[in-house]
Length: 186
Picture 1 (cartoon, rainbow, N blue to C red):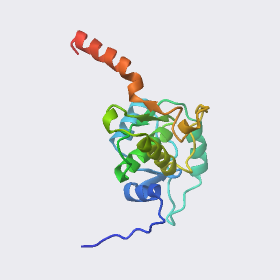
Picture 2: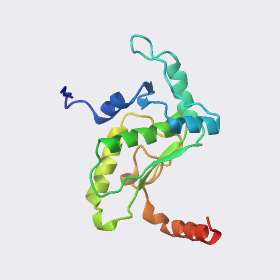
Picture 3: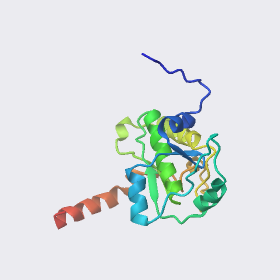
């Protein structure tokens, strides 16, 4: 059986991009999939920033044009990364971070960071801090979302759009929506 030896100096984001992509999109991985196809079909918008790569592996001149379009696009797509703060992130989380942030950037949208704090007996501030640090690291060097508000709380600042959100902040809304669906028979 063959084993892979990956140098310890390879950043996790680079490893995820290498293992999962077919094309590069202004510094992040892109592999067409059913989600990006559905977004393209429903919005009539193609992902911005897709690169054609020359035979020598260098990006074509279209990269600069696509980059400008990518950053200045309207905010029509909103994605989120919703980890549960009951442990440390693993490689699967890194891929999810890369995917959710990439889709938002490709379509000129934004990505929210939302802690799924629905199991308080297993959660810890240590995990919250670690998750935020890891997401900042995986997304380091990529463009910020245009128009992202700057918040006075520096703990909330990161590559995501706006404050870190918590599912528990929306329990009343979730409850009201569930009751409405039950009453309507949906």
